[in-house]
Image: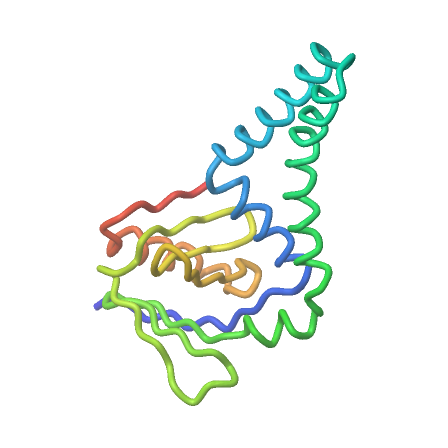
Length: 168
């Protein structure tokens, strides 16, 4: 019988920043490529049409767009208090062959996610990130997991997810 692994995990502000940037740029390289292309177009327009007011305005818009996106991400991170992030993300996660039982530490009940409903699972250098739908993710810090349980968690995820498991 497959064993059950229980983990209590939470993230802090530094982890939150890492996850925001990973979700925007690491998970899908296309976003970073598009923002880079927009910036490059802005440089080209500035170089080719720097003598005209319209050229400067259009170049300014293209050059500013990626910086605005990054600025908004930083603003989102900055306005979150560390204690609030830790309190909101602290949870108990139980992995087994049937799925994942997740309970927010302040809640009286848990949510069970059947493996058939897991969209994608990622392993990064610092986290296990499991998307249970296109928006909602469960994030477990590797440092919160006993060393001997990490391999078993990966095995459970790989054995039971019908979708992608992406590790690096």
